[in-house]
Image (cartoon, rainbow, N blue to C red; front, side):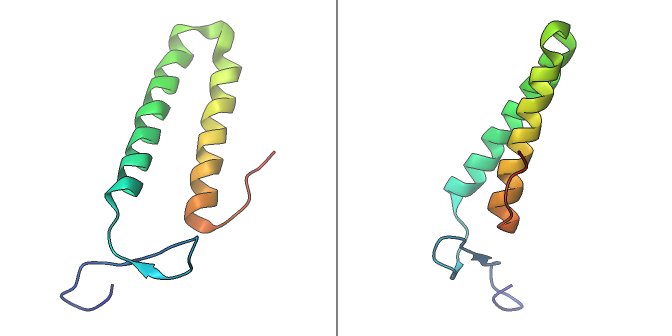
Length: 75
């Protein structure tokens, strides 16, 4: 946090600075969560594509990890 009473600030990966809350970033992660939910449900509906859905979920997880922790995605 930026101070005891202040709103939390977050490190920006691009500029390497502390930034205030960004609703666009929250919207991105919210949409990723919706997509993950849909893919998870599709795995049970279309068994022939289960492996593909699992790969898509892994990819989304890797993208989130690379954004949050500055790590590289698994191949």
